[in-house]
Length: 410
Image (cartoon, rainbow, N blue to C red):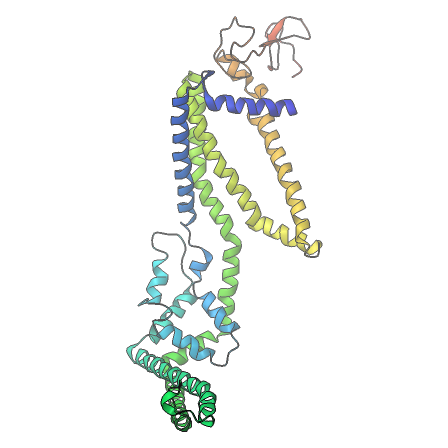
């Protein structure tokens, strides 16, 4: 087994840096590396682009996050907060939420949830001039309220030191404080009166905003548990299948490239086009690398392994590090099975021997040889074996002797 692995690795690197069994010169090798880098960058860019072809679950259900935040919020003023956030420019400068949601699907597969589109329409209704004017009034009143409260805090902080100065008999002209003690109480009282007025006006404006028909309609929609449960369930389902869809699109991008590179490589080897064979081999390797990476990535987040992960987590009582033992064991076993499959079926010399012998090629490396050659001049493989019946020499790996026709043990 170790010998096969060693030969495979040696073959791989030999094919990567030789043309017709001759090593590449340094300049050619540098050019080839630059080509490889360019191809790799474009392959991964293409994969990233095709992965975004189908809209993601968060793009298909863009209202879910905000809606969930509203439902999870326990503050008493959460109704006003969500109305205010959608009316003012503080959260978003978008003019139309519905158009923004729909724009995400342009030239892409998938649709935005109808529930979220209705949600966006109701949000857009909130953003009318009258509501914006009310929200602006609340903002200005709140700013003034904060200034008054800040002024009171400053006066109170200076009051104690002003009293000490007065007790000590220090003239007011030498005081370090801006407000004399006798005026501090008067200013605080006046500020408190203005603070109370501002709070009353703010509360009145908030009630006006919440009482608007469009606000009531939006809040009623937010509190529709049936609608929320619907998009919550649909989002879970979309998130469950999204990794599989992404892998499908990535395979759609990679498999034609791999097939074309493999066909060109086999043709170039058969016809003896060394440079074409070398470049196509590099392309084949480059196209297979992201394929392997994406498959392993899918195994980590794909829906099948997600269920296996949940099952194992339940068995191991959420000791998740034990689950990774399963991955560490499973992946090498899967890789071993794939290697065996390709070694014994796809690239097995015994399977390919008949075609190679008919075309006067080596039974092992498939290089062109003469019929009189008993050994391959390229890899050194002996081409014949002794027949168990007539003891004449016959071709390796063929089911019958070419001298007496007796079946051979393969």
